[in-house]
Amino acid sequence: MKKSKETWIAEGESAFYKTYNRFPVVFERGEGLHLYDTDGQEYLDFYAGIAVNALGYGDKEYTDCLKEQAERLLHISNYFYNTPSIEAGEKLTKAAQMDKVFFTNSGTEAVEGALKIARRYAYNKDGGHDHEIIAMKNSFHGRSIGALSVTGNDHYQEPFKPLLPGIVFAEFNNLDSVKALFHEKTCAVIMETVQGEGGIYPATKEFIEGVRALCDEHDALLILDEIQCGMGRTGEMFAWQHYGVKPDVMTVAKALGNGVPVGAFLACGKAASAMVPGDHGTTYGGNPFVCAAASKVLDIFQSRNLTAHVREIGQYLWEKLEEVKAQYDIVADHRGLGLMQGLEFTVPVGPIVANALLEQKLVLISAGTSIIRFVPPLVIEKADVDEMVKRLKKAIESAR
Image (cartoon, rainbow, N blue to C red; front, side, top):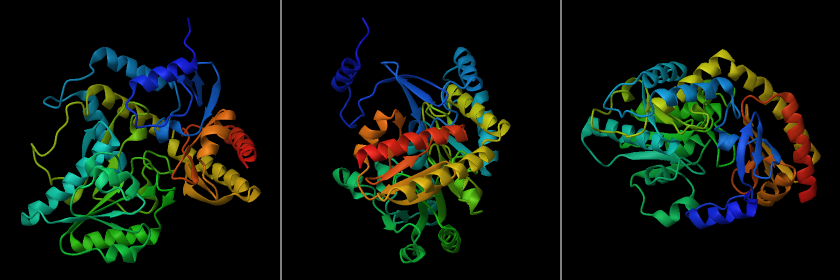
């Protein structure tokens, strides 16, 4: 006998540790740009598993690669070399214009590694433990203690204090606030090139150039978190390439594996040799299976010229969301780059996302309390944008 949606949800609530308030939908498969629940209902996906499923669902070239690697070798540990990790490492460092890479299991772990590079780099210079890292208010870097320590949101931090010492917070896109915090013990600045969870705020050119100059002046490292905004999402392979401001350390994840859990931190120049053998490690990170996935994703990005496609469709999405903004007085602002955009509302968007949008079989998520976030698979076409906007308007009208 087939289980009902309600039965699945009840069993999940019984089994899962309660750290999520999940939407009342049980998905069981995906195809292209669509998800299907246990009742066989079809949903248009415009959130891509939080900017992860860049190629959509069931891409044959990608899934064939996974099947082949699963039959060859899943895991071997980092005590040995494996061919997929070497291939993925070469492709990723080339695409990112960086010198060295360390593969992790997640974006949060990539941030942890980046923070360790910063601390080790400073320790190598003077042997001290009193260095500071400047992070940004309204930022999000992950849920582990280290990543949470540089996440500029009191709501996430408060229950878990005390966090890492030596972290101070500036205002994103306010260069003077960064300057005011710099001193001789500042070892790094960490920030998202485009703030995601904080509301879809791209860095201004003046700000990111100014922060780069400050880091150069004080011999500090610039760490750019590209976990959500990287991997082609903004129309360049990495968002910093819009500005021509290269970081010393960069974190990536999400779309790197297209659903397979893999992340990485990369370093160049003076940061590339900061850590030495024994300073960092991982059991699963960089195993043959996840690196085969990452390698294939990088191949597909290049062969299909996905960044150019994102620029084209991202512009079309921008125009259509501008029309939505003009039509509804509860839409206050529109921000973003490429296929990472947000509409800010004058009312909380939780009920719209959880109720009205799901009634229209449209999957979107929020960023903060008042922003609906648009981070669809990068393979969407203009017709998909049109269909999304049609359903979005119905949802807005039903929620007013």
